[in-house]
Image 1 (tube, rainbow, N blue to C red):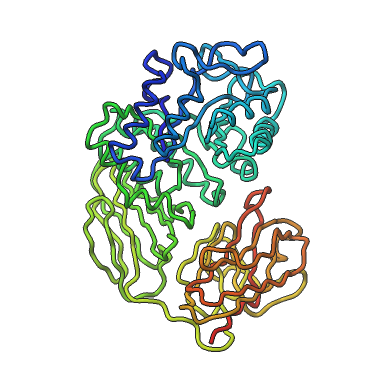
Image 2 (image 1 turned 90 degrees about the vertical axis):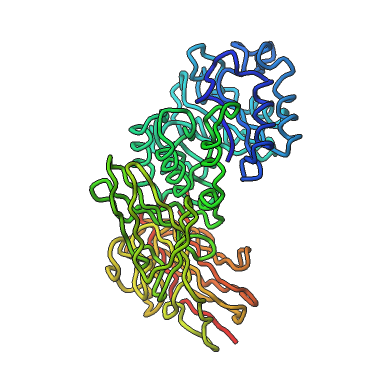
Length: 509
């Protein structure tokens, strides 16, 4: 969460050291910092047109007379973080063609670290010297890592080389589309492209549909609320692109809606899935770390429409009643299952839905996990299957659970990225399972399988492949309120990632 100057200033003369420091001041005075925004990032045009005699990048003497480190120090002094920009080619993207980073990766990374840079946006302009996108971005990843300084790495190659299939091990976020523009059509098109890539997002590796246009004047406040809601549901980086020096109270109210921000920043980190899209009426669901589910009802049409779904379709299970909190109006209502709203043209209603009542802890003794009701579940493709493998579509379309030729009568069939959680109530001691990629994928697929409780990883099968046999996983969950079973895609992406928690049991007192 933060700010980038490009959409509001581009390369104009107003882009200066004083402007950037002023933005940091506004983060504090307007409440943006308290709402969670932390990165003050500067984009293209910060450098001199040529490197110095040592080959180092040099800050533009007119815009930044005291150098980049002085600006970073000022931003850090406000309790914020500082971000910088360059390109994975010979020149950057502005028409003036400032020096790019290709061939200078370690030299530039060392310089950025010495300046106190916390975030690097690495663009895609200039001559690539015959190198692939993976080569160019991996080279900068390695250079940043070698500095020893934690620097968030934002890959900006515009989705041209399908980075969602390879960038999980390279960067912290990757642009999925071309640049956003401040109009309804651009925002809508980018949403439709990015929402389909939910399966490729994971903890520490996020789909990036580009910066926020909220407040720049090309859309209505209703449309901007939709923009902000959809970006938050999709776990997008929330980088403000408007000029905060002139931002209206309405703009700041959208940008500081903490209930909506909480969806984007939820620690479970699961991107929303679009569960229906009919005639311009979209329903998105997003499981949350505390067991709630966010439901967004988005109307792309030019007239008001009623949009509906159910708690069951949203993955909330079989509770008898649910509480709905509208995250824009703040109204709280209840339902026995129907989730519906009259949504204005180009508007979005976002509910945080919670179950009434509490979950019951497993009984004493050893119980098959597949016989318990999950308190939260999220799956890459298809539902979490009970005593079957994952068939990617409808419930029950899987096969007998089989790992390395061994079949199992009980367990869970999932597809990365998957998160399944069970309430333990502090009464249980041990979780056990055989973990692996189901034989139905052949020799394909590779996942990381982890067991979490009380915010720590209690056991892992490590990375398991389609060629591996079952691996025994035993986790001490003594005293934990919940156990969470996580299956994450690896460097080969989520394809073929049918994973099994076979013969999974929980032992309780």
